[in-house]
Length: 258
Image (cartoon, rainbow, N blue to C red; front, side, top):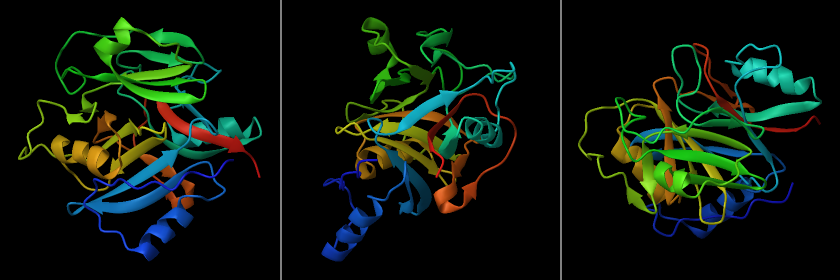
C-alpha cells in the first residue's frame, strides 16, 4: 500500500501545533488499508475512517452467492476470509427497505440491481437533492442524483442515498442549524484529492452539524448521508465491532490476509 498523504483542512476550526500536526501525519500513514480515528466536533464524538480508493479494494456487498443477504459484518468477514482476504473496515452502506433490498440505485460488480430514483418522496431519502456514491476503477465520487442521471458514469459499485449533506461546498438547503431532530448518523464524502472519508457520530446530532463536520473538519466538498439510527461501524484497528439488527447493503475494504 502507498502511504496516505498527510492532510489538513486549513478551514478547520482545529488549532494545530507543530507536534500535533506531526503526530497526525504519522498516524495517517500506517501500513493498513484504512485509517480510523476518533474525534469530537462541537461536543459530539465521532469516528472518521479514510481510504485511498486508488490503492485499496473498497466495495459494496448485499447478497451472498447462496442467495442470502449478507446482513452482518461477520458474514462479510467470513466470506472474504474464504477467498484469502480480511475485512479491514465496514459500515452500513445504503438505505434499505423492510426486506433489506436497497432503496434507489444499487450496483454491485457492474450489475445494476436496483434502479436510480429521481423523484422526491417521504423520509430522508426523498429529501432532494439526494445523491449516489460511485466507485469506478480506482476512483470514487459522491454525485448529486440529477447530475448523475444527466451524465451517468460507469460505476463498478454504487449506492444511492439521501439527502446530500454537502453539494460543491454548500450545505443542503433544507438543513436547519437549530433542528432538534438528532440521531446517530453515518455518511461518506470525497475530498478534492480523491480520498474517501466515512464518518459515524457516536452520539446523536442533527443534519446541519453532521454536514458541517464533513465540510469544515473532514474536508469533503461533496458528502452523502448514508443512514441514521441503524448506523454501525466495523473497525478492527479500533477494536470496534458494532452489532444490531441485520443490515441491507454494506460498504467495506478488504486486503490480503497477513
